[in-house]
Amino acid sequence: MPSSIPVQIASLHFPSLNQARIFYRDILHQYQPGQCVSEKDKQQVMNLMTSSNFPFPAHAESVICVVQAYYGKNCFASVGADKLPHYVSIMHSLKRSAAENNASEMKK
Image 1 (cartoon, rainbow, N blue to C red):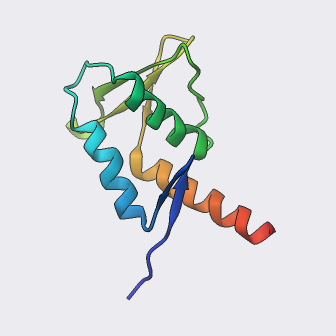
Image 2: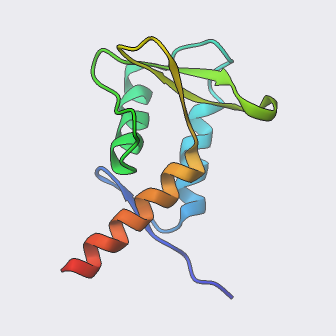
């Protein structure tokens, strides 16, 4: 049986990837496609993006919305200075964050 992979996003510590996924999924499900997230939720999504070294980092002026992406699934999208939506995959971001956390621990 595989063991849980803990992950840390900013100051939040999750005992497993699944617990973190549920946390961000619950935020996602509070909104309909086309809606922008609240400032509190925006900060949580931006923390996720920063932790995973998202290639299109969100800034304070960025807008985080919920959009319908590939295969009809809802996801977060960051719209920055380039005015293009950059999809944010929750699981992909969490896995990258866990890998980053693990690499940091290995260096210590």
